[in-house]
Image (tube, rainbow, N blue to C red; front, side, top):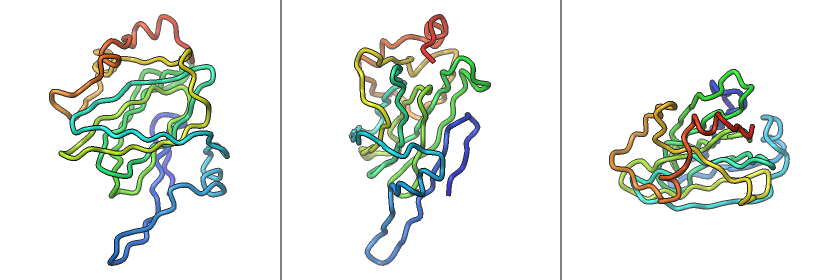
Length: 181
């Protein structure tokens, strides 16, 4: 099942899980079906990150080429956040968050033009897998600080663990002065 979220282009995909006494099975990606949902036909890379409890990663984006992400969790739980940074969008500067976990069978499609971040929920590490539809380019990598006072993202962790790189990302108002989308 696919649900369009409140920010244009953002989609929540609920995977069908087949449970039995051994556990469950799910198709995480099926090209024809996912293409019918409006997702890219081809992804060019799979990424995997493992994060400790309390970690916040982000908010990251890439421009030229913009990079869409299909995000899911294979172990643990995260609170996944997408911020619309497309200057001409009706939801510019708004954010949305969903819980993704190894249990709930959800994926989040985040198209190019969004900043993305997440925090780890609970007491266990989280393994996050995501497919991307464009190559990584260090020259066009950017970000907005997770604690931006204009965005007012309500992160559900106290005393987060944040990389030095992510602690010095620009504010949303700095991004607004020179938007890349």
